[in-house]
Image (cartoon, rainbow, N blue to C red; front, side):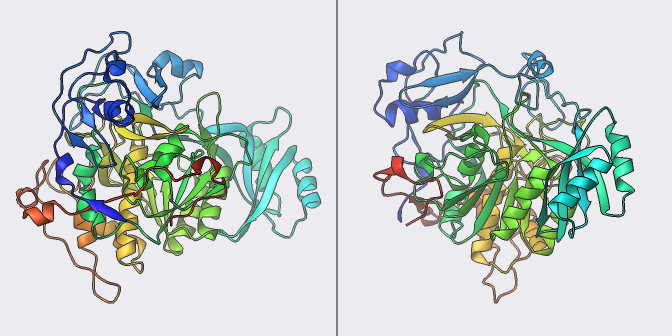
Length: 541
């Protein structure tokens, strides 16, 4: 794999859409005049996944497009989407978790990025469905008869290897309430436990065009170029339990991605799953946190009137798939209520020493803890912006382990497109990649050891010491990888992190040969014949 120096891109620029200019006009040879209606600020010349910046003329923003979210574009097309409003959310037309507002709100310790209104958790159950553990010796016919005796219909039941139990999904027939149906069903000797089928939501929030240049700033904040000189996640398998991933996106060329479908759906690739996977393994024009990792792309979120959603039963299937196919890390960029069944699944994963990483949630500072992030077996991640401020919509809590960039993140989107998006979803994905770098260095590390390394090597943000906004601080990939010894050696402890919002002076003053550590690039941005790549997965050469 070819490598090149990283210092040419380590300067931040002041506009949120500079990256788009590079990709779709400089990078692909389009006319810069084509961008003048939607872009302003410096031009960005991005010929590979490592950007180089130059100062160009300012370009006016079209006032009709200002404040809209760029959700996908390529050399031929630019599409925009109006940010989610409270009215959209109430009418069921909004897939985001946070209502947008023209009035920014400054939260304590956070950045002003619109109204971080909390979503209602009142409708977090599917009103006519029950998930129950039943006797594994029952045949399908016997399980159907059992359901009918209590006014239920069995939708599906199966043995979950992860739990060593048979779990079924049942629908309530007639007018019986969820509480009454659950209480009656639980009284049968063949039923071991009963609970609602909870809803879960993906944790992304589309953002409008803003001042402040993403310029792949997560690379700088996480010190990915330096870390990738030591590890890129090779031979580490990360399960992404999410919506569908566009396997044919150029950013995934040569990556080993194996798709699974816990929904048995016909939905195509989705913007969220594609973006989350890109934050981990993108490697052509962008740089993911673990570009050499293997991905298990587990579709567990499907389209609904309120955006992509999943349920307790489907997510349990996703966890079971991840465990049975050798996942060493599971990324969970979704959130929902406390769920006994999912909690059992997470405990079983932890018993197998599988590292679990989850988005803290985008429900804002007044939200109760959201799950799975708040589960004690999970590494919870909050989101920061390019100025190290907390994402206003990010959940807070003592369960937060670390923070990572999650505001105005430039990522792949389905159909060879790209997106700028925000949310703790993408912070979680970056940390899953960092965990892959750590495990490449020492595959014998246990879940608690990986968590400890990420926290011990984080850059402290906010009040000194761990806090409920940033946890131990913003993750540092290079420090984390450097702190990992070979399997036969004890784990090294990184030097004490500087209590500052900026990179430490020691980091800035590294010798030139250290600052210019090579960055992995691909020989070809898109392999010949990639349009005919099979959907069953791709393999890194």
